[in-house]
Length: 331
Ligand code: UT7
Image (cartoon, rainbow, N blue to C red; front, side, top):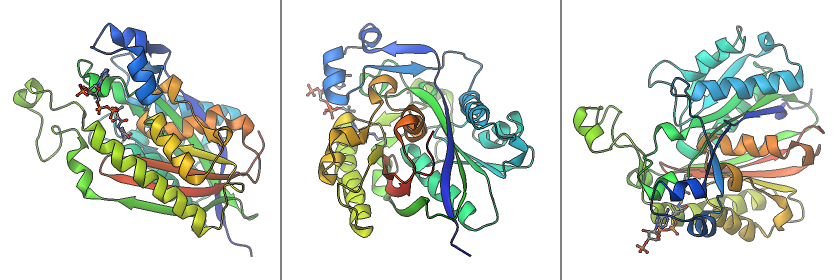
């Protein structure tokens, strides 16, 4: 019997309707379109305005989009992972609620939290369950309502992030398609540079923490930028070397959309032409766990069976890594 690999066989996505443009941000904080565009590549981002809707709303919509496109019976789904940095609640799992709402009544589910690398790590996790032979259909969703943890008076963070969700289905493949290799890393040196101070066990929320805005994201952007540029390029180069992939062999780079300059630096180190570098940061900003599946969804028509794709991400923690995958279908 040939070896089982884990292939992505369907994708779906959801972004909210409300568009927060750079022009609109100019009316909220001391910034301007030229600064944001040249420093980040972002023009606009989507925001989930409804106060009564959390991350699960977008996760459910993305999953339903996948289910409808693929004509999938949700009762066949074995497992649901929601990769997120903004679960609906700290304890009751967003993935469990999502699974129930989409009719995945035979699945077990849990959240996977690793900042901006949540989806990349989730790809590794989902693949392992499929490769084991025990599970046939694993639904991995990346979803974040970043607007729920952003201080819209802080120009250093509010211009970067947006809301959105994407979903992919992993299934067994016996033709050598799907996940080929991974190189995942983390380093606690990053803990101080990108974080939310309050709301966890170390500093539970209180009137005092709210008064000090400690329930919002803090980022030392310059430091995170330096680590992101070198580390994302390093792991992408490493996975190419390890799998003897030249720049000609790589069909696409699907990289976390945090900053266009970080993506460009990674692509340059890999020696890739611009056409191979998939981007949508201009329209969505940094949607944290949703960037990678949103790219797959937006560019699904361009991805062809057998294409060699390198995924790369970098995020708080620090967490980062790369995955080499062979695309498994033509849409
Ligand atoms: O996804 C998870 C991982 N996150 C990342 O990868 C993000 C990494 N970091 C970044 O993308 C960039 O550091 C930022 C986009 C956040 C900031 O860009 P930067 O080029 O590193 O700017 P900076 O923080 O070094 O600030 C440069 C200047 C400062 O002014 P002075 O001190 O030089 O006078 C800032 O006060 O730009 C100022 N500045 C702004 N100006 C206009 C900071 N934010 C803004 C703003 N509009 N929104």
